[in-house]
Image 1 (cartoon, one colour):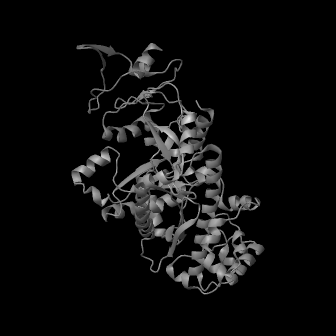
Image 2 (cartoon, helix red, strand yellow):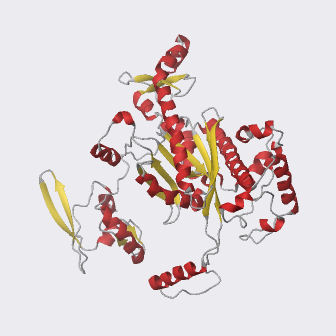
Image 3 (cartoon, one colour):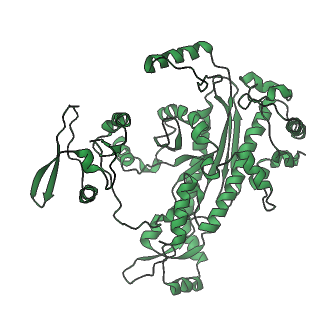
Length: 510
């Protein structure tokens, strides 16, 4: 126990040989003032083993992390060695408590988005080459029932995105489907959001500029007296003492209401970041591949300046964050920009892609059907998105039924010019090996007529716009519930477990 506690104290790696040798000598240097002394560590694995843990561990001498098998350690070393010597930091405060006050503030603008993709058949010759290459690397592949054979390639052919503002209204939306088969849809998608977010960034900065003046108009002597009578911070609820620097806390967004008095430290933590979450359903497993493929070209062209990912595995990312161009007024040199990046203080606005499935844990269709049972559900965003169609006589209530899209049929740009709804056979689902139900197909025909669809390009646009708007309605409903109940904005989080941890700490007031 003493050994383990000692290693958790102020310990760091001073030197590690880059050469792989059969025998490693591990030394620990004890320091006290100007005196130091070396001790021999005969068995590093045993020395680093936690109390009452007698399992064999393999230690990385670059970061002192332990692994249960040698293969995992060898894979880890490939990445760890490139980073350099590392140290695991432990919290100074032994008590875990909620202090992320920025997460109690509203995220001013949220984006909701979706891709659609063509599913052209794989080239059999290319598939054979891929299999042969795999056999060279890993040896002959064993054929079994679980073997995976690629049948289709997923190539993005269109997208839609929706921006919702701090009042819960649809601020802006865009949708698109390709006109040529060689278009880079992912590049166009991210660039369109990044361009629009520049306007939102300026709007937020304008709010920051006028907020102090608006606060003076809104705050009254009565409100100040009530806040002073409470004599406690409106964030941490700790009573004020004479040495505290006390400031007025107000809403950062219109109408800039006075909220209460706060510690200066708490108030500074509650500042609004120019960061916009983009929720995509099943992003971690599907849409992330489209986004990542475009990042190289986006950075090379200057649309984005920096990239940060939170991986779940080598193929799945929990989140991808990209930073836009640095603010013009900063006029930073390349060297200053590099320093800013290292200090994690990027100068531009940020887009943070998040998987909405991490909050809902269910398919969008099931979520919509559940939401329909709530009489208070208005599907506000969906109705605002299709306002023009409704004014032209379309029955918007049809959109809340189960939708249909012939994924197997749509393979090239030419398929967008089909001027009628494809027959039932073309809606066959190859993945689930199920044909479309009669009532679903009849419903699709009714939607086609009601919304006066002219071709499959318009059908694609309707389908992807609807998915995006419905996702916005579902997520905004959950967001409002969490904000009202726990006073935490879902837009700051990456998943439901992360938010649940803060909810528990905030409500328990640890």
